[in-house]
Amino acid sequence: AIKGGILDFSAKTPKILSKKIKKPKAILSISAHFESDLNFLTANNSHDILYDFYWFPKKLYDVNFKIKWSEILALEIQKNLKDFEINLDYNSKIDHWIWSIYNHFDKNLKDVPLLSFSINSNFSFEQHIKLARKLKVLKSEWYLIIWSWNFVHNLKQLDWHNPKNVYSWALEFNNDLKEIIKSWNLQKLSDMKKNKYFKLSHPTLDHFIPIIYILALKEENEEIIFFNDEIELWSLSM
Image (cartoon, rainbow, N blue to C red; front, side, top):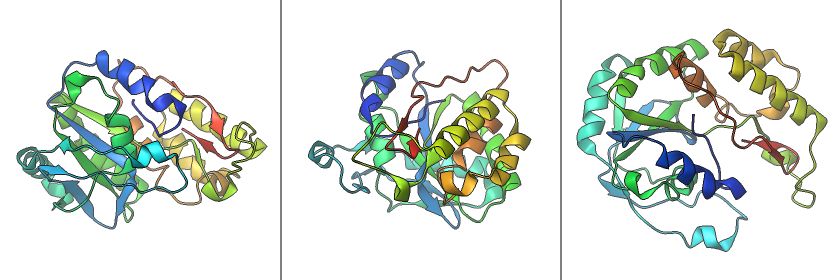
């Protein structure tokens, strides 16, 4: 599973991993930053990037490039997922999680179309599982599926003055969730909503829901790798 953000690891990790990947038919992203009350799939042939963040280094605001999209592939996915009423989105820009990772992919992936799938905020846990399992057909057709999510994501509790310190509750939740991901157990993942630190760790569900897709799409022969096992700014871990 490839996950990420725009911290120190974003430049080196995607490039290293993408060099090891067979060139896919397309890249499908499920980003915590693309949430809606319906199912949307981007169908832009090319579009601008979105600077949907604040207080970050100026060099990130200077980044500017276009990503290859494909309406044809979007229509193909829409047909395969006809039971889920997928709406094609021709207007959304590329959110910061997608482009901050994609920008550092190896050059062999730069001409591969990228489509972004929204997180349906009205779906139940079970509905997300059903959709994720339906996406397995795309894996068999050699789509590379990437996710944006967090172990802990509480921006109101961030402390920019002591970036390497960690709240005890954030560390405990981070470690508990990591063990559940290792166990590949969707029921235990669902039960995490009862964890005493869940609301602190995830005040909103947008950065938690993509984990459902990771576990539901995982095959027995696939290995889960944690390449950025750190908590930053007290309450942010990826």
